[in-house]
Image 1: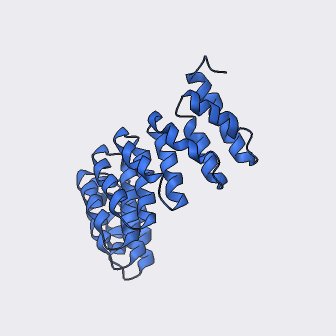
Image 2 (image 1 turned 30 degrees about the vertical axis):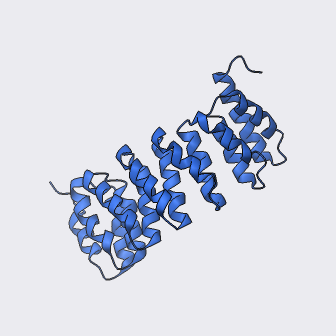
Image 3 (image 1 turned 45 degrees about the vertical axis):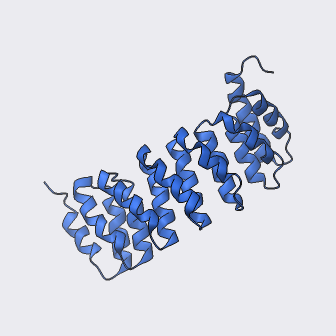
Length: 226
């Protein structure tokens, strides 16, 4: 039996008022995928950019094979905001088959926001195949992309990245140092421990706190280290 709100939402999705289309898309997240997806799909190509973006986010709640395929196609959309949204959504749906597509986008796209979203999603997927791309991302000129790559390397447990990460211990950006501290807590090596002891004395309290929390985690992995 169809969901009781289906006719109402289907009507709102055809409204000339973008606000009604947006609200209907939000409501569709709670409907079963077989009913919701056919209604969301046309809105991926809406004339109004916020509606397209909301439709992309709505697909996260309905990660069918066709939805993932459409998101992958949208990684090549002419609009960089749509590409960034698609990259972010792919990390949320959790399908490891998209690692290659996200890696390609990071290496080839010229917009930093798209590359940032791709790096975050590669971390969310926790797939070790993203290792080389994320190491490459550490050299990006945009600090936010560097920060995303640092966090993602911790998510995928890339212990081999520790030497490359240590150059950020003295970053001028305290958020980068804080992210680094959290990441090193996921990479149990003697070098990580040494860097965390240094960051625990950082002038910024949030960096120091993050380092102390990371030290607690890493000492469980390295019981013979002081």
